[in-house]
Image (cartoon, rainbow, N blue to C red; front, side, top):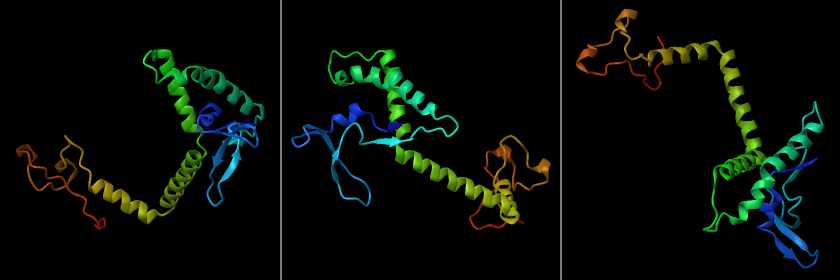
Length: 182
């Protein structure tokens, strides 16, 4: 099933009437490809299997239908009137418009791909850190050395503070760049 990453109604606002096909068309731009003038608003941003669930093939259609009924259709009824002075943005329309904008954001293929890459990069870095005991020990020592919880006397833990905190001095140990743990 083709899922739209951008609603058709929104795409139609940017479409032009093509005299050759006698229908609305969009210019489509993709990285490493020449511009293409034949994109239709109905298929320009439709991706096969965007919400696909390998365990349940019918789930994608259910999600698409639910998003269309709950947000796209109701918002499409009033979106063109938003610019008019007589338009009243009540609580229900705010709820619908918020869901609509959230849907546009989460449907963005680029955002989903970037989020997946960022999450993978972070997880790879954390896994590499967990495997390296030396780096993990150094990091723990730096974090511990640079942190002095407020209201807790460091003298009770055997640390030298270099002064009395009651006089208002900030004499917590500082973390210096490049400092190796003792």
